[in-house]
Length: 515
Image (cartoon, rainbow, N blue to C red; front, top):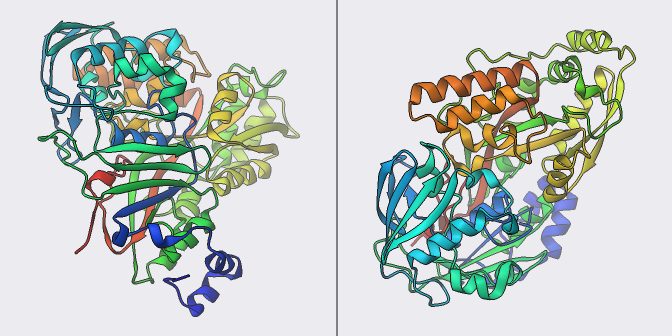
């Protein structure tokens, strides 16, 4: 098998990784520039390929490469541009009229019509749809067809961020096909209008895509430059690195910083780092459903946990790569996100012990903590907690299992991360977890009211003030502990021209092979 790494480098990387490199788990003949096939690998698999029925980042990536949305947000300028909708007009604060583009076809040959738009948005609002992230669409009341090329979206209340959502987590489904095959059939053979079309998918292994040769002209993202795109699921990080080095895959991400530094020495690879909108946080079972007489019902225990963890040390020594400590439960650059006035929980183990004693736990306590990625981060948190007497047991789960356990009140502490579906508005983060929905484990009426007021006000100043009030109360009550922003280290073949974006959306349709 051809390899990109010599024996000396193997010794530096360690025997375990070297054995993976020599063994190989994939034939690199089908990957790379020679075969016009970009193979990318990640550690997680979406539970469903339907873009409305998963909220894993890998599912978001597939959605952006396979489906189109009504609008497009330019990642460089932040401006909203026409996509499947050629024009839009606000009739009033709760009525949005859109003109639907003519001449667009779905991957199965069906023409895009206003009926597809109306079906999509009306369907995802129904309980039967069982979509995963309801906050992405529940600002809509209904959608109706108003002409051969037009629709009208009726909102439940004013929602200034509507255009942002219409350019992100709201792709358009093919009505006739979806009705025919149902959700189960659609998840096995999805159909969109995007630059790539899915040709096969196998659970536990990945998804194969080919360029949509009939992609509509004039799209703001343009026709895909690479002919074939393949997503492979490789849970083990060392195995992903081995596949990259031997040519089995062309692109990986979430590479630990120390390994990324090593990979930079390989002239056949390119390594880039970029901060993302993703923020890690600890979410607490505030209502105490997971444990009888749960200590987390006491704000002093939650505050003790916050003071027990040295987030700055984790950023400096573990995360690195441009990460920042976050004090408010949102990404600092989102509209409405602020940490002014939000309580700071500095690392202070002595104060943590005092708070535990005041709460009636002088000898510490036992609790469970669930996580689904970056196990070393979760283990570092557990180490800090143990140092002040909080004996946390780690449950390491798949994301869907952890999410469902949190929703059902079966987990005391969840090590969560959230990338906001790349929505540049605080409603895409804080509102998901504290506006009374399935993810809300606090159900604080004051916070819910402030977030709803912020979501629906048409005055930017009022929006910011309401969001600030909600973020301050969340922090004061320690309903959750923001940890830090997530950087991402990308490593890929030097033959590939790829640009990383802060919104954590790898735009593979824009990637190309270098000449």
